[in-house]
Image (cartoon, rainbow, N blue to C red; front, side, top):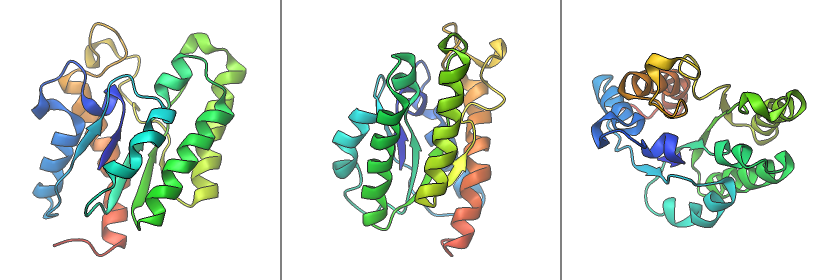
Length: 183
């Protein structure tokens, strides 16, 4: 389950260009027989994620790629509130025996150094406290690269989405191997 905001939903991309669709292809290519469900909602916040996580986890979900927080930070939400919400999503996922891969975000450059540092530390602390794998920065290699983003400079284009997919897969693959989930 790819659970997130517009970065997961694939705002501005075709369904086949989204990172969840590309991740599905990548898994199949390596012999993993999973259906990747795109549960991204454009504009979603961590609070919105808390409200919808239970129904999103209904069914046979084994892994959750949790990519939320960017919209919280764009709105200047308190970092402690985002952490509380993400922790709740992780706890609810784990209570259903779902392994969580937490996608870290960075603050926009105009957010100020202190706020940016709080966000970075929040993701690191949360992953450690909850015992989940952390992707340090979901948009690694894509953010700030004009040729990999749409005109808004925020959302990856098709080429950027391929890089995001490889970033996610690099952290997800060891989780798949550890769970003995190759079919």
